[in-house]
Image 1: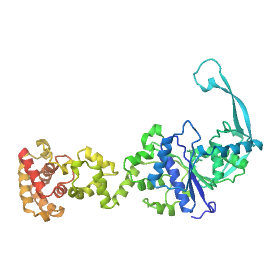
Image 2 (image 1 turned 180 degrees about the vertical axis):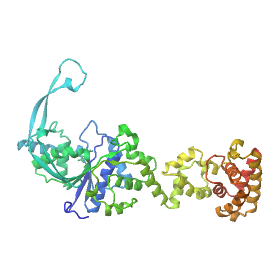
Image 3 (image 1 turned 30 degrees about the horizontal axis):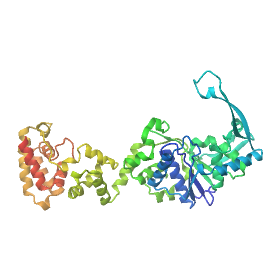
Image 4 (image 1 turned 90 degrees about the vertical axis):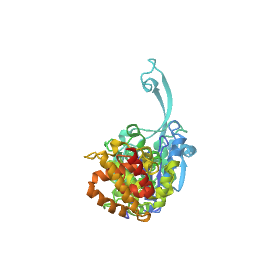
Length: 459
Ligand code: GLU
């Protein structure tokens, strides 16, 4: 994995603009930077790019910070561009003094800006600071895309600041990367077209050109760019936290949006990722964010959890009436089988898929009759006979194996459907529920017999 392009004393940065909730695409940028820093024993800087005063919001910054924490992406230094105005100002002055930038007096046609505004022509005189473009070819190394060459002539003398106190994105990124000693810039592909400007500015301020890695876009399953407008809350990291996803599962999944290890293995701990990840092997083509796959990852992580952790999660999500230690212990595996994410437990509660473990169900005649050729008489008779069989099993033998053995013999004699269906409905009151043996085991002997008796009486 040693790559001569990578070198030593690595410094990377994650540089989000707090203009929206922490986006999953941003989280992948953060993850790859985090892994890259760790694998090269380098430094990760978190830089909040909040120079756009109108669009930057504290709540978004908080959301990014809390998302980083949830995902376990620690960083070594934290900066805010809004606090670095004096540094930028010095650079602007220097660039102007050296003739590399200039103040440009311009007339802004406000009518053009306010589309459909008044007819009257209102012009505003304005000053901006433009970079004096040397109009040349620039080259940069991209670990994912190879060497990229660009002719900057078309960029013209682009704006680098609206005033001495209002530098714009292109300038501040370059100054900060230089001041902070950033060696590698891992960021989204949407910035690739900004890079030539950045290189011109780097050359102008005497900064070395960092090595780039532009990550492929993240696409939704419809292959459209994953965007908040089109794909809603599933684009924000907060959503996954709120839905009870396991952060390790989420970042494992995210690590594979655009990269793979070249083997069949997909479940990786963060330490394994730090060993195996290779930025140069990230794909160029857009990478699909597949929700089904994410659910699969999450379930795989849940399955590996120790029982106590599952039980705690269940207890936290069950209402007061369902806080029965013994039953929760018995159903924890069943619950795990039926969920992908912990919030599915809430759904099970709401959908009535848990209730029957704790409350006597209400039985309807229609439901208890086996649909494919059963009668109410058969249901009644078989339930009474089952009750007799159960009575003869001792409390300590009342386990899945014994129950299956005794009842399957009976069911084979009487016809499976006519035995197992009414039994399951008598115990759960539901068309769909776990199999009757499981229900018997969870409910225990007394409660089971009691429910069967009640069912027989009520039909
Ligand atoms: N602040 C930019 C963004 O949020 C990132 C700039 C960069 O990584 O160079 O898209």
